[in-house]
Amino acid sequence: MTRTWILPMLLVVCGSLVSAGLLVSGSPGGAASILLVFVLLAGVNSALVFPRSIGALEAQRRSAVDGRPVVFWRPGCTFCIRLRIRLGRHARQVHWVNIWRDPAAAAAVRAANNGNETVPTVVVAGRPHTNPDPDWVREQCSPSA
Image (cartoon, rainbow, N blue to C red; front, side, top):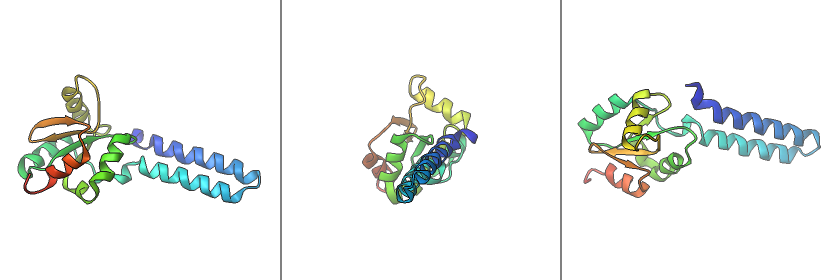
């Protein structure tokens, strides 16, 4: 769990240091702006942007029952963030699995990607798809898919 928060915390600390430097040099507006940018970046790179993650085995079980896709992701991954944002309201219709929290999930991703932990890896009907187009994933969420 700690690894999940390293990047967001690092962004907040760096933003605070830069803002403090700007504040000392007499630029309170610039300091506030920089701090806001770093806090927003930390939020986007945190686990807070994604729906609650579940374990790989639970996601596979649920997917077998309801047919919804399973998305393997990790915090800080820009492609995962892009997928999450582009899915919009459909993001809650997929099962999210954080590979940094679940060793079985990381192993499943490595098995699907020739030993690499390439995310996002989306599993639909038992078939893995590495970094698929978000529009395609959204289509898989619809009842007609």
